[in-house]
Image (spheres, rainbow, N blue to C red):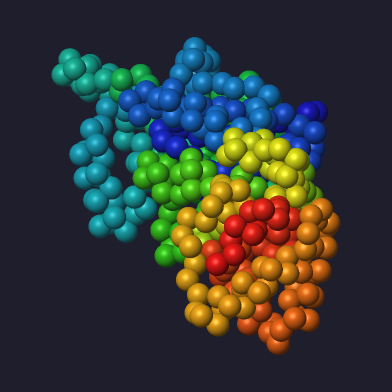
Length: 457
Ligand code: GLU
């Protein structure tokens, strides 16, 4: 049996780091088991789903390093859901209801005041054919509910009915079907809610493992019953905890908060996002993993905590720095070339500056410092200027080897009485215009003798 997972967002906005968590849990699980990863777009809500959103989700996933073995759109598979509906109707497991939302609301209130759970009381099952004819004459169209198997012989007398599964993340889970309303599977206008198409697709696409957020735990009880009703065995489930912002707010696709696209635009590396999205809220330390393969080694769904994981977006910046610090030139080369960082000095330049970058694009600042005149001439006290002039006069002749900085500063030390910060700081300022940055020993050979001399104050 090939492990088959799916990532099934509704294309109603751009995916955020919480959605990336679900996608990555599935992708890494598939990688570990040499399985298949299906991209499924849950776009039965045509009013809110768009192809643009689906395309941007695919773009974001590819950028993260997730590639699909198949891509499916539920809007193109309606006939499969119609067939499932026919099966359920034939088995007497789907029944027509005519209540309006207001009527349902009122009933729930009445049940609450009587101390009953606010679930649907299956009143539609008791409708006479005259009542149904009357509704239809009034122009009311039915919505359809799935009859949950939570009774012995009389659906109006539900009994505690436990559905159990061994969750990949949460361990033993139980949902009592008597505590739930029969779910509406088909709306008045004939369109589908999420529950049935998801199960029909999971069956037909041979999904073996459903890994998703723990906001679906209750759905799983219902869906396991639906798998059975459709004659299929339920797959294995895993429900990971959800991510919230540091202040505890949930993430929403529609708000655009922390969308993968906006993080990319602000210069966050895909592996910074993937590392945080996967390791936060688990018993593993959050650390910058250089590749999805390395992350897969650290990934264990069972190490995920059951409570929501608060995360701090600032942590992405810390991870970003760590990734850049160790990023080999071969990984950075193409992106540096786009910034104009090319030629034989590109590699030593990258190795010199990568430890000082928040974002890869910050390399451009240093490339300019090394290749162009300084934007602002630094200002010095008279003593520092005199010291620097003397120091620049001691600059070694060409050709420069890799130890030129050592040779030069040894000569400066010998000629005067400055050492430590008093020696290095004015030199750093004169050479780079900044008070901190990469090792001067690395920058000096990149500057070359001529450009260095031009910075003599
Ligand atoms: N479209 C559903 C969601 O985004 C999919 C849930 C599932 O994986 O079954 O929540």
